[in-house]
Length: 210
Image 1 (cartoon, rainbow, N blue to C red):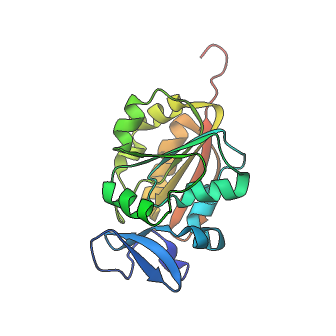
Image 2: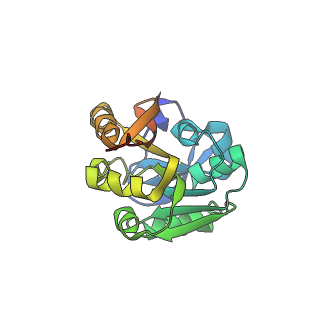
């Protein structure tokens, strides 16, 4: 696949189903015509924007919202070794079923949860030192990700100076998303990958007296 095809944009797959497809010799998981994940054997060699989401440290407890076929958790383990735990949340039971049947969810420390990501975050009582947000349904981005209420809930899950990483697709989403994230987080760096913008940030530390 070309770099252009590695984005979460329009892909040359017409069927609106969850399936494993071949793309230039790579096995990919396709949802609504859009590549959502790549096979374990291809993830390390290809990487795409998922590689840009890997944190710059070895997290002990990680949360991935938008698990798909577990490409990001696999790259994290490849880079840093096994985590104590990686909680991966996806609301599409069929995506998880297909990925599990292919063995793609066999990642050390991974706990796959089938639940709406927003509901999970709202009820979650756990703490994490890394949260990766890769929430798309096909090529559609849920703008609730950029609401201050949700970003505040994510901040509450993080043990400072823990790391938030958000994948934003498309120039409009990237521009508005970066501004929204900066309200509550200090942006460390933003990495453009095709039409994706991968934002790395940490929770703002309040000055004394605030």
